[in-house]
Length: 138
Length: 132
Image 1 (cartoon, rainbow over the protein chains, first blue to last red):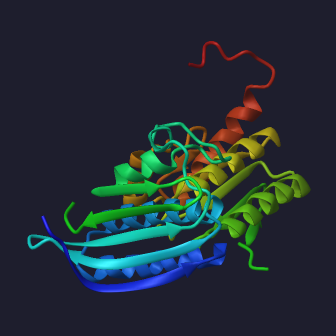
Image 2 (cartoon, helix red, strand yellow):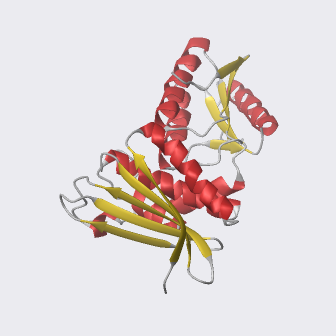
């Protein structure tokens, strides 16, 4: 299944105050394709969780927002790229209840439940890239 | 620095969150609220989140903290007006907001706080094993 990108933009995230404008931009992408309020809320909540990880563990980074289509449906894809220390054990990080930080440990597995597609790539010393996709009716 | 206003209404404190919170703002609200409870010996806190379109795990933790801290200072916290989409998202995310009492709107929240004050006034001298 191939997806095509209709629209795309990048944002640099270096401080906490960048989070709210980013959430608003992601929401606008959802509104533009007619996503329901519930799916918009899930998408921006997932974005908020991941951008917090990006700041806390990755020391900031880049976020790409895309409006995508797979032929049948439109959706929003958000990619979070940091150059932080990376995740040693992704399988462990994806377990419910696991956290190295002071948060609740819901981050990654909780976030995964909110979106339709969730992909994580990480290499020790080379940062982490997380990509999420939420389809309009997903 | 930006702050969320806290209104004093008799024994209660009223907080209406009209903006989407970033972390520092939420942390300021937590400490301001706890200080205000202590300063005025408030008995109840009502937090209106009807204008909040997103609660993530951080914000959820702050709400839980506020509820626990105020209880330690002998005040009850009621969160009112949560949007349905926010409630659904919170549960799917895995946050159940344990310990946070909620009500549908400000009016019901106020009633709840008043009834809680009444019961806590009455139950002091006796063990309420027949009030179940």
